[in-house]
Length: 296
Ligand SMILES: [Cu+2]
Image (cartoon, rainbow, N blue to C red; front, side):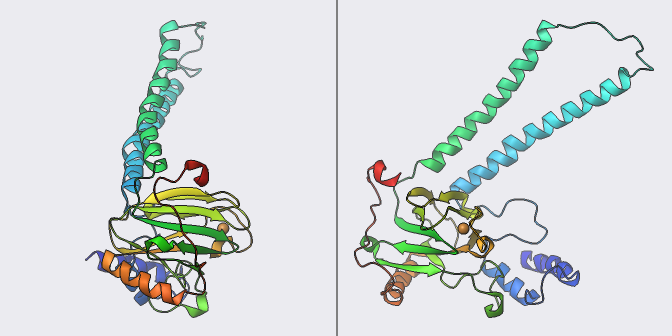
């Protein structure tokens, strides 16, 4: 049902010639059925949230920030309209000479402070949840490069390999692939597990961003940043480099395939063979209890 209505919506854009011909309705329907985390035509809200952090971010935006900014905007609009109507030159030819009103001055200082405190409480709580990585089940190291991503899976977790992940060029797209987002090698992670992501870069500053996971962190050469996510649903979740990093900045998407723990184990085994030559044999990454000095 959802798919049918989505397909109907997409067909409108297709007829309008918004998409190139390669972005066919069939491939869109297949993509919509398979992948959850991608931007949709006509979308004005966030991409669907599939991690606790993303849910918290959406709640913070939808139920704290949005009501407050709508309230403030309406208040200012009504105040301006009132002043225009009540105190225009025709209605009020002689202006009052009042310059001070203590009650009013205290109110317009205290009220904004209170609004900021109301925003700060959930904001700091969310920041803490983002920054404090819970005990992780899987560690993945991501390195931003001009213009692709390299994923390292540590040996002590059944990995010991690394691989490069490149955008699939438009000429090589197969049905179900998504233009500008599908990659040749997706990063695979298990569903419902805490994934600790270590992020760095090899050349210039990139930014590792997956909207559905609610993560975005700079990839800086010579520095190891960290973030985490716990995907609640299987599917493919896309992101893009979010820091201008050179001429192909727009062509280094991020793709995470979230699978069941059994599929993950099977993938680890096959990927270890497939990428055997690519990964440093001795690669080991600490997951818990690593001194923070090593991570920052
Ligand atoms: Cu980049």
